[in-house]
Image (cartoon, one colour):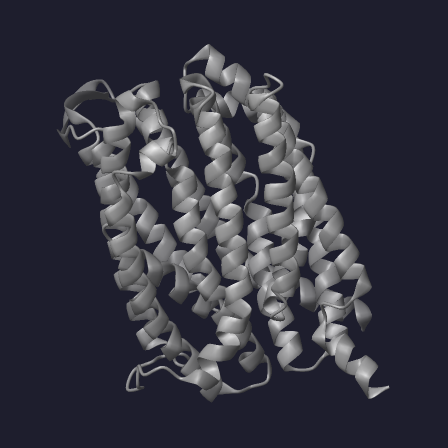
Length: 462
């Protein structure tokens, strides 16, 4: 009987996780293609695109945090069989998307010319980087819809719809990249030649392709939410509902502060690396791009962990909470050991996909092999964070992440690069120290059990 239950738990975990993993794999593949295609234009083009990447994380992660509040609320409602509250929360997610989409559009477009200056980008590429950033954030409302509505659907156990929309977005982006980045050219194909139309827009073509793809994604995910049998906001009022918004915001606010604080840390981190010069910036950009593919198992499983933890809380099932968490941790450890091993072996070959500069490849290979060794332990921290987010415990992850980012990564990198003459290797060493601290803090907090509302209720009942 226990074996059958274990197999069922594994089946549920993978049913939730695999569409998210595939979606992230597609996103990473497109990111690879983007960097490779822009990289063909030269190191300066790669640096112009990569210089504002961490600001993209800052904006994107802040919007994602709002989705976490709805994820916890809807997953709990679904676990309790409360269809009405789930639908009300989805409607409030629409209102939230409209507000934050408009707000962030004004903010990002207004600051687009200043962002490269704040990021200490080389003066000769600041204008190009600013134009790239402006175009990328023109469809911010659609980007917010894709992020928040995707999270809402996953909270109700529908991970396939966001995956399908993600695939469509990525395919659109790739096709438009081919058409917009390069000029019209003749390509040899099976012994013949084919003329391919091209707009010859370079870096700005890549930004335009992404902007159009984001717009397509936002429209499609909105249509999917409107048709959803459980969550559809059709016919419901978009007025603020305090009984839904306040619980969601109590969960979302610490997570938003966490993501804002850590993403701001990424901005400071990248700014210090940009100050090291064009080679270090390019190596950091392509190494980050390569590394992102090897975190797919962790973040795919995190979605499953958050949803299932919320379901268990809604059903008040302590045993399901405990067994699900342990199973996901075991699976995740195995997957991330394999992922880290592959990253260590394939680092130089992967970097060759994005750059032909020997200095960039050598430096990027060194830092990737350093971080590959710590992949499994960082994966565990990601899963434990997902479980805590799923049950609405966002304060501890906020404290752990912000402390690690600013107390270890940023201070360490500042000292190493400004006072001790360290370069990119020293900066990534500080990043690894940050990941190790997160692992220890999350693991200790998990074993204490104070994060689990069901265990707290059990103690009170005694």
